[in-house]
Amino acid sequence: MKKFLFSIVAFIALFPIANTQAQGRLGAVIGADLSTLKFDQNLFTVDQSLGYSAGIMGELNIPGIGFGINASLLYTQRGATMHLGEKEVWASQGYGNTRSYLHYIEVPINVRFKYSNLNGIENTIAPFVFAGPSFSFLAAHNKIDAISYAGMDLELHVGIGAELYNKIQVAASYGWGMTYALKTNLLDDFSAQNRTWKLTVTYFFK
Image (cartoon, rainbow, N blue to C red; front, side, top):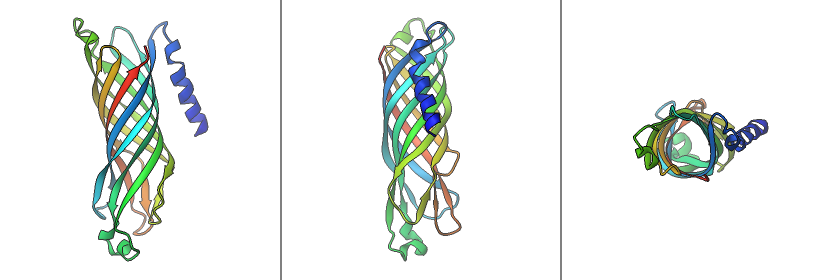
């Protein structure tokens, strides 16, 4: 994990240097998310919860054709409220409505297409679409004895956004967890995957 994160940090840091054939830049990212947990079975009610993220993004653009890639290093908090008390097996242990807090070091990597030939309009607003995987490494969580947590989560996401004045990007995305984020310790270890709506704002330094 440490080697992977070091590689991503180095990758982001070197983005601005790659200006010979592509245009690289760095930015600061903040975001809010609305997340839930999708269980294999309909065990109990799960409510969406608000979370947040913050970090840095490196972006590499190929001039003239609109395609580019970006990678971010984020601290992300997400989770959901689980109504464990709806099942007797947990109600008998004193559980009711339990909020799960998942704290991740998240590394999203995207392929992006930005509309860059709009007769000058792109210098004011340039729409874009993107998609890619996101690797989330569990950094911390609240203690729930009925639940066990996975150390890593893989998510696929797609999104849309717009760049304003070649400086600020506003983006919205939806992510599907491809691996389990947590499991119940009873009822044959039913597992749940993350599902996340995310809104981010990125300010580029140049």
